[in-house]
Length: 420
Image 1 (cartoon, one colour):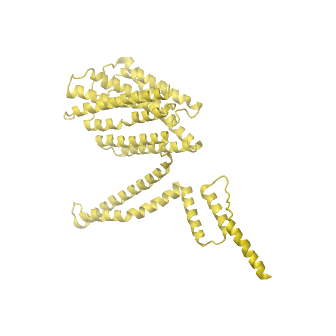
Image 2 (cartoon, one colour):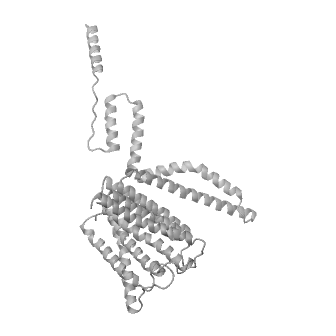
Image 3 (cartoon, one colour):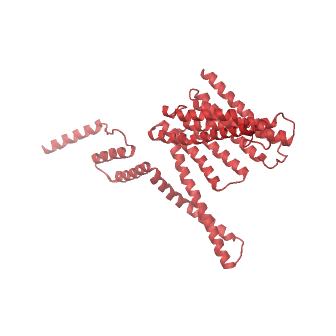
């Protein structure tokens, strides 16, 4: 396939996905004033989820059109097409069953069967997106078993999941193609088993990233850092939600924002745009994330302590405004000292080479002001370069100054004439 044809195909698939999202947004706005019954995702949540699914097809189209030989972009296009079916089918079924009953054909078929197909395609490609990053190829031949296990499990789930009678309803109500009895139970076992294989395969796929990072260098190492950074933020969001479940609308908003961060990180890694800035971004994330958590703990701890003391002294329940003002002033006073201390700690703990290089350069700068021996200064400079940059070989060559040489010769002649 020529690059032009590949680009046309990539943007065509992307356009289909974006069209589905546009239709879902249209149906959401048309039904916005009609409240949905219990069991349905609210219109606000559907709206946010729809915007969140714009990322995968755009990312896939961008990568596949610019790197058509890399299968990774085509995987994102497939994932995006499957994922965009979810908000579209949900909005379609909600409008056809609740807002304007009978206005659209086969709402339960679309809301359950088509949505199930999209879900199966998306979840099947998920471990492959991890396993084949960033080149679109397996790390080695030994990983073929994992890839084939995912593909076979996804194919089984794709074929039999539309006939499940229970546990696959994306909209409330009876499944139109559901099969009961012994056959239905066998189908349920097959689908659950296939889903388990796909989800378990994510673990070795993530392990492959660690193994590749240990032996990678240069560009590939930076690409893996970008992917790990985006995925790490995404996993951190789900970890926080494990302990605190926000309202459904906020949950959709968090998933959309952190999902967008993952798409941006993958796009930067594959297209190599501003690739080498990942270390600065990770450093700033660690510093300001730790600083925010520390200041929040100080703020709420100070407010809670002040309120306890105030209640013990006055037996009043309301929160004094003075406590909030004092806590805010304490936060403002601690901001810069805490930031410097946290920055220094992170540099020492995670960026030791950079921290040592900075200390070495500071020491050399101090010696440079006092050193007068040129030979000693040359040796010191070579040592600093070797210690900070760690080159394979380093040497120093001074350009001869003919004027200086002539001056030395003339001085020697004058001294010789004076002695005579």
